[in-house]
Length: 261
Length: 283
Image 1: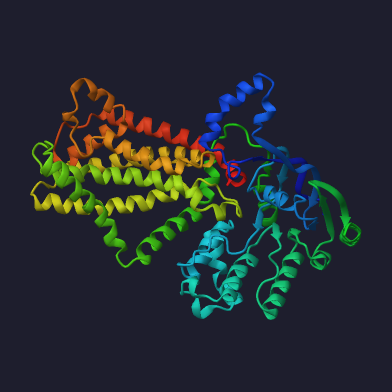
Image 2: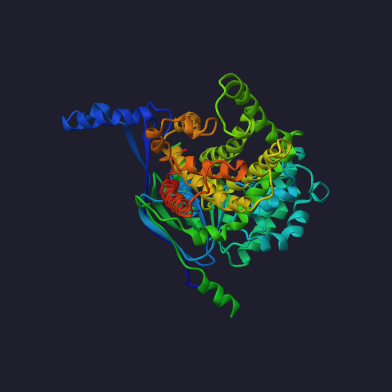
């Protein structure tokens, strides 16, 4: 123990929201306006043409995660949970500070990423597996296990658009739990399928945990956090409000939410 | 022992704020070759399985274009095409243009088309535009067979060492197109309107390349301007192979084209890499 898995140092993330242009993207209109904006600024009248609003989704987040730890992240909507996961998952980069990953990370922000309805279950296992960062040999080796776990043996060569939504989710989830991550990032994807399959999934998660993987889990479900995570980080308004043992942090958080309502 | 080695193998990854320009990490790209392979396979499977006439459609496109230009420029305007009929003159360059524009188009649109995956999953974004090159090359192969058929019918084809030049020309064309595609792909992240503009830009580019007309109808003093477009010299070279028109392409000219195409590709890759940090934030 004591080996570092993730180190976050003063991580901040800024989003710029441009107004009146239908989203975050610059259009040519903005480019054409730019010289005029610049002139206005020179005249000290820039405020009138202010093109964007800045939002700090994360402010000065610092924490260490040790190898084998399981960490829950809680907070209200818009507290910065997803942004933090996105940065650790390397989908977006921080505006300030840095995060160092000392182990291989697999992220499950969504199950069935890259699934194509017109391809067969078999094809989708390979495609989705490679999106999740599995090597070809790894997928081949686990292929049978994935198929058996998902209970869709008969339909493995059928295009997934003919699958029931239950079959679709089971296949997607089955690929996900057969990753062999050192660090696993999860965004509320635990509840899938019928009761029987859910039990199987929970068991698989438990296996992953006891195998020594480092887990970071975002959830709105306090019980899930309590059951799976030893430690919890509470984010509020982009900053860490509390970081400690799950029971204590979740209690405080529940109290905070109750008082606010 | 095994476990210890594995720990040492993993170099820590630093996630830091993006710099203005970043160099592509080719080593990481190589690690994702499996993903590249399955993306290519996905594209091919989908193209040939979705429509019954998937294969036919690939042949129909150049055929229809050829017929249109044959009627208007070959029969009505009577554009001079030397020793070959107009439709073959046109097709011999059009299949090259098709390859070129298809790579640019698909590369540039690959980010927008896969945005659902981009915001949920990390992988070097460059695999998306790069994966489009292979399906464009397959289409080219099919169009090429079509051209061969026309050459045989009109008795222009002869087995010759000239055809050995084709792989060299294809490499130059592909690298050049992929570089332009990466540049447009990067721009697409910043300017939404680029999507609509791209079609027009490609159309103008096609008219400025001697595809439907020979360079000889351009006044000689302006020809040099046409050769600023690297595609002009490439089309000349392809026509030399297919139609035995013009002169043997000079080795040094080909080398220069290759160098220019490669430099362009690397610039495209750097711009793309620098822009890819913004994709998830912006789209």
